[in-house]
Amino acid sequence: MGILSTIVIPDEVVMNKIYVVRDQKIMLDRDLAELYGVETKVLKQAVRRNITRFPEDFMFEMNKEELENWRSQFVTSNGDRQGLRYMPFCFTEQGVTMLSCVLSSERAIHVNIQIIRIYTRIRGMLLLHKDVSLLVEQVEKKLLKQDQKIEVLFTYLNKFIEKEDKPREEIGFKRKGKSGPAKSEDAEL
Image (cartoon, rainbow, N blue to C red; front, side):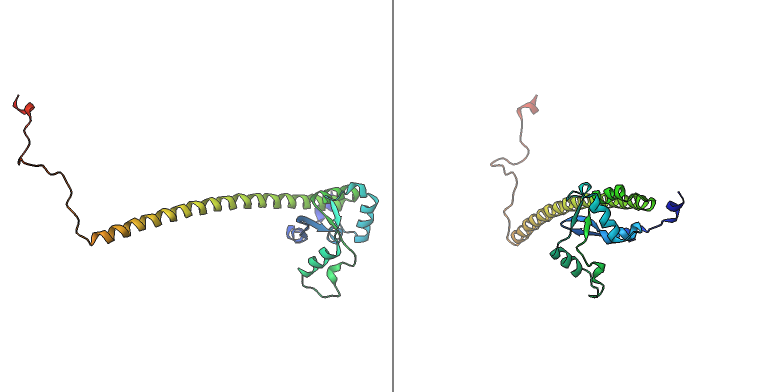
């Protein structure tokens, strides 16, 4: 329990190490190795020894094009090369979870728990964002309908104002012949 209380990695540090490659949220081998406190080659060796635990949807190796695209998103010197000399392993959320089985140090377990909690929070934020987006879309549709109704109202008002300039024919009930109130046979009784 002693090491768990001393390991404090700010959530922002972990979140800044989550990237999107192949339309998946992933973490790179070198970043995970840093968080776990091991060398990248040690992490990769452990994965290779247990490769059957890491199907394609858990972990994949970035290809050259993906690596160049990923590097181009971050401005760095050529000497640094983002710390990558070889094609990195990319771990999905499930792959990070599987790493806790392969790297069973106390630190790796603690860091894995933190990473999984962050992934869960990200998923929750995305769902909330989706709900908010749907509500905004509904409000926009209602506003569009209201705009259309207001436009029709103004069209009718303009037509009414144009007709107001012309003299109008009087309207109402006109009786022929008799003037005064009408007599009813029932009134004589």
